[in-house]
Length: 253
Image (cartoon, rainbow, N blue to C red; front, side, top):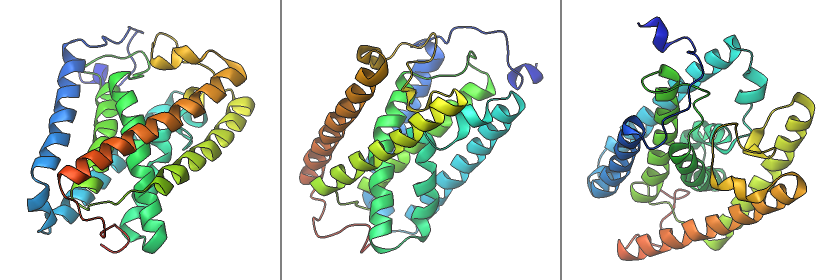
């Protein structure tokens, strides 16, 4: 029984929006809400550093699991290069605790915007590689992307990350740069980073709207840019209502 939760099982369509999926999404959403509700207590205690470090440790553990999984099943290069949003985000997450000044602010911007978009997409439209609950790979998928979303909310609510229009612009250009490397990797090793070559077989997402080839690439870039400004607008609405000080950012915090 235990080995059945570790080794790949015969391919079975993921039960999208089934009981397990809905419970996982609910837990992630409640975690985000809890961070927002208890933000003031965390801001004024050492708890915020402890919480941040717990997030990083858990992310590292589940990422190591994913590396081992993909290594043994021959997908390491095609799946684990940091060329998906949620794979690339792990780099600024590791740098963030040690960074200062502009680098700290830039890392926080990448974590927030990539985390909110990539984490949300992967949670709502997961790609569990033909596995289903309660397989460990499925649990890893939701733990990893759930904590990415929690980390993004943590930065805004607890560390009071300040975002400006230039923040969105930096992230958009960074994403275009990432997509160039992703396309090069896709061409040479037959991968599908950033889903530039189409969706994973059997997984239907809004990315289906963008077709294939250069049309898909341009469509994804435009859509990503629009979504980032929407996320920025939601952030501004939230920050104004919660009276987050505009003079405070993670660079100075």
